[in-house]
Every structure is written in structure tokens, then in C-alpha cells.
Length: 163
Image (spheres, helix red, strand yellow):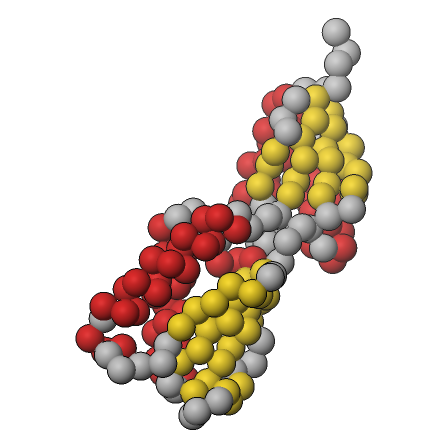
């Protein structure tokens, strides 16, 4: 009965939910009075969001609307990485936002150290952009999950393939 239990730690953004959140934000921008006649828009281009608006104040308002819609749809804003606000065509400003997919090397080191310091009887193995955690006890695996949920990690982590 010494079967090993395992799960994977991943960090992914659901692109379908993100598209839905962007469409809802665009709809709200079109109907709001303070954006009447504004050139504000949000576009999804490959792995980047491009937000365009008239000035930095309106750009911040567009980002606030987008964050609210993303949060309502269960998408964490932790996985967004903002670039500098830059001037764009016809007196507008643009900001590119890239989405972090997968657990990068720096965060996987932090996660491994956290798990190792917890003294739980589990093993971790980095597999590309995800981490596999194995152990004999499901209770230990659930303790690792609760430990990582409480930890201050700059990514939104999902726990999948619990076997």
C-alpha cells in the first residue's frame, strides 16, 4: 500500500476567460459617460494585452475596469507584468501588459525552498514550467498546498493532477 501520491504546481492564465473579461470591460467602457468620445480600447495580441487611452488618467481607469472584470471571472492579476506607459499615435498613450505563463526558475526556487523548510515528507521535481510534488501521504500534499496558498509568491498558482 505504499503508493505515491502527487500533484503539479502550475501557473496559467485561462485565455478564454481573459477574452470574456476583456469583452465585458470593452462593453463597459463604451457605455460609461466619462469615456464618451474617448479612444480607449483593450486588445489581446498573442501573449500580450495592449491598453490604449487618451491620457494616463483614463488609462488607469481602463486598467481598473479590466482588473475588476478579471477578478469577477476568477483571473488573478498577479500574472500580469506591466511595461512602461508610452505615447502612441494621435495623442494617445499605450501600455503593454504581458502575461506570465508557467512557473519561472526564480519562483520555482522559492517554492522548493518553502517546501523543503516546511519539513514535510514530500519530494519536489521541476518539470519545465511546472513543479511536481510527490509524497506518501495525501495529508502532506494538502499541507503543501495550504502552505503555498499562504506564501507570498508573485504568481497565481494552481494545483492540478492530484493523484
